[in-house]
Length: 563
Ligand code: ADP
Image 1 (cartoon, rainbow, N blue to C red):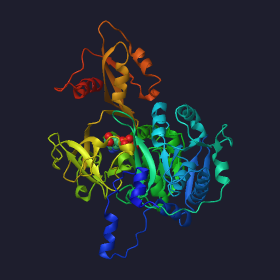
Image 2 (tube, protein in one colour):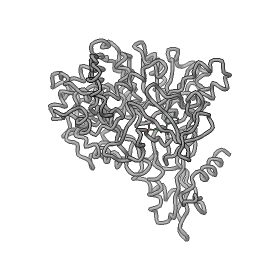
Image 3 (cartoon, protein in one colour):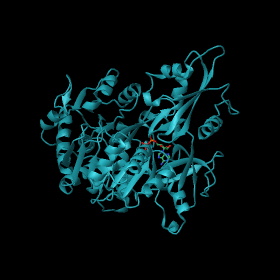
């Protein structure tokens, strides 16, 4: 039998809970408190014994509504776990999911960690190359895939062989050599959960790297449980048994910001929107199901706001208490726009490496009597660290910056649900010797401890909540025979938050059109990652050390956009 810490090492958990020595201290002090494990088993057992009546609503891909309950999902989770165990999935092994926000995904969330395996959520929007790298790096043994995503899966399968493929079929059949989800679950008696140590791996998610390959973050039971508890607090996202929660943020994106687990724990109702996330579909669900809390990236809410402005009386959103918005900066115009309709946005900041919740922007009581202007100014910031999370920032001189809202530095974070390393030991330079993770976000911190992101030290573009690697685009552009140099920068975009712009220096005597270059990128990048704007310039400005001076390019092109 492995000790907890040994087991954790076996699974590669690098969450910030792996501090040795903590466990043995108890004995010396004569403590008699139950060392009950903070495992996700408690979440599912609570869901099935106390919150089993709570609704889980799903809008199927064809638009029809399917109604089930938390109790039914929990019962099916036990059967799914038994089915996976019968296929030979053992402790610490990864089971991938390629699913929308749908009951089967919730069942996988509830089944896989308590059986001792690891749920690895795959993002179907990534390019096949990235996906197959990720599946291989995680050594996924099985995958649960929705029928509507079989084309993405087929392309991925060419590169990585899953031993078991389980298809969630809406038509009742699965392709050859795949198992049908319903047949697998109905063929098995519910599993009795094994004892699981809280420091064992529970879930896994990959984050895009600025350079090199995506990196895996493994969450432990303990980190997910603590994250769920803090997520549910009234001054965090505020999740109660009286809430009806619609996570627009996908369940393949940093555990849908922890909402499915927080909802299951608190016994809140869940509304799972499936693949259709256009403004009308989201609004129909918000109004039709009387949703009280929802969450997603700014891009979604921009189109939702536009739809409300066009038809202000069409949707009754009187039940909606708050919208948690994050993943990219929330423009002040979005806060103001929803306020006009009596709807409140709360900004959150987080990362895959932070499970993801790091900070929430709740206006503190000290600002109760502040002017409207000052309150908006505050709400457009990324917020104050949530309990257990510590934030600090370090300036260019290597010193920690003061909380004076002036000095700027790279944000560092630590806490019980912050990664202490990546799967396989990649990217170790982002973790300091004294246990902090360097985020790559450049911030100012005010006297309330509220952070404001002013820049990004990492070379990435975030479009509609999804990453595009500038460096990968540059490398491929520079592989084109007519291109001497290429620099990709993020330019602000009203709809997507940011879009990539490629500045190109052509080789002497060579020619290439923007379309030629886009064509060159096609195939290696997903369509939405390819820059619309390609600008030809004489030379790329450089820093003293010879690196591309992207700040100057940004000034040049961002101002041009503004003009
Ligand atoms: P997520 O799945 O939460 O988007 P990622 O790890 O993909 O997590 O992205 C994290 C990064 O997204 C942060 O380091 C930051 O650059 C950006 N980000 C997240 N929330 C905000 C926010 N509220 N404002 C500005 N940028 C944000």
